[in-house]
Image (cartoon, rainbow over all chains, first blue to last red):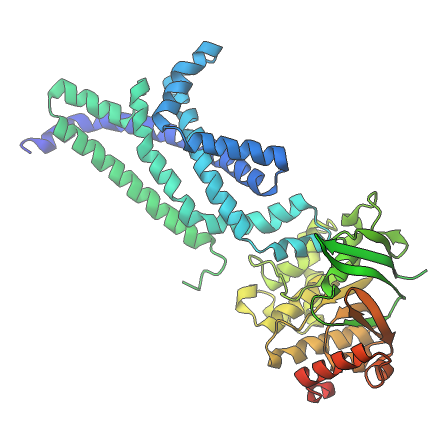
Length: 221
Length: 252
């Protein structure tokens, strides 16, 4: 550990640049993943047969293949059909498409946990199905889903590290680079790990605060 | 023209034939109570009336509009038909006030502030203004059911359907709900009630319909049907519910 703090002072700025890239990727894939995941979750519950089959098929395909393969496919495979993406965009899309499949299942579970009677009550007032879903089901399901759903943003933050395989200059890639140039892999990876740990801790705390903030009965804790 | 006309309605769930040709009518201001053993299609019948379930055969008109016509936009008719559920089905994420006002906002396009004023009036009508800011989980079953009645009333319905409104309540909470219903009945509301509350029948019902095995086998004014039913089947059933629910509650 000799000179660790000296080492940290020198290389932290580089790692912070990587952290910014990691966070960019993370925001991109969470945006794609949450919107698509919610849409897939709704399709699984309310979709007609073809929609249900398509969304279920998508979820099984994604959950049944390795994330690494998906990233390589998007970055190296898609250009063959004319879709050229920068590494950051390719990684964000691949991670987003991946997390969407898992998030869909969380959303589906939460949507199905809302008592059917509330939807019937809403329909009985004259609401359309879309109104019943958006005004009655989703406000409750989205609250209920937070504890399980919270796994995904945290996992994604860490999984984004495998984007280094397609040359995204994110946190892990920078740590590796520093390791090669200084031969101090231990210190480099230790610093990177600490940054991940700090980020995931902040994220977990924020999600916990969000969960409390939006709970229907804040008193009952 | 009758406010409600039900003509020869049939409904099956798979092989199970639940309704086997039910017909009756209601005029404005009528209070009718449907009684009958469990599993005879009482709830199914009510759910057919507001289109939560579609009958396999037969027709239903509400105020001259055919509910069972596939061309009818059911969302346009439902606000006219209040529905009070056995399990209240209040919206868990909304306060009592918003449970009552949300229909006005979403369905009638009213401004939130206006809807809340109206909703407050309806909560007053069921004696629950002081609970306006409470969530369903913070209320007793009786209070929740009164809020759900207020929610139905807010839409200014032409008639209200009650599906066993007191069956899920603790005995000591039934009275407050029945009182609200009796007040409504006396105020001229048209009501079709599935219930075994004999006291309610005696107090306000114009007619009791005895539904058994998917058919209305007997109907009549409570004074007649309750004391002197024509059919053995009706007599047996009445004896059972009077034994179960007790005569003392009749005085309520």
